[in-house]
Image (cartoon, chains in turn orange, blue):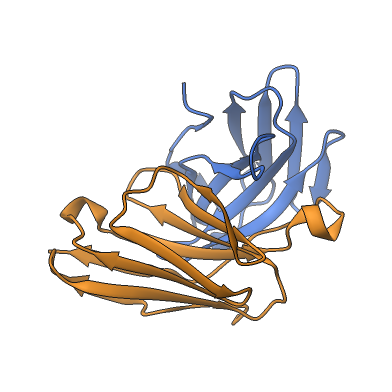
Length: 118
Length: 111
């Protein structure tokens, strides 16, 4: 399935590096999400964008900086990360029910970027 | 208390067995409920929504008990391909009505 794509799929970076994760959705959705999935922990919602406007920021450290230039693309800019930031970063998209008028906003996930911070 | 709680398992069952997973949620105002499936090193995918009246999709049956704040998933006639982690997901009623995920229950179906 290619509804939601993410690049890169794997990333190893040092604590002083700056890198960006990219997500693209081809489903015509208007909401996009970043999640973090660490071992033995539930998915943690990081950011939500609806119609390119950030609508939720779940107390995420400033070393994570999201960008949503349009409804199809979402970026997560990373800088001065810590080893505990190593995790699977998942992007998802859905139709914002506020605009679709229906409560069937199934979220479709991309394959994720497995990030390792050394 | 966690917003969504699940037994992490693993549940080890033979092919053909019936297995049930339970999930509890803490927010009584939660509005929607789902089961997602996540295969090893893959992304979560929606398995089924959970409706108040209960719903069935082939070998899978989901039930919701709002009074007890409890959701269940029943899998009949387990297949090897059912081996995965099953995530209980609840939609809140505040902010963006975000989805809250449980840690998942791991199922291993053996021949």
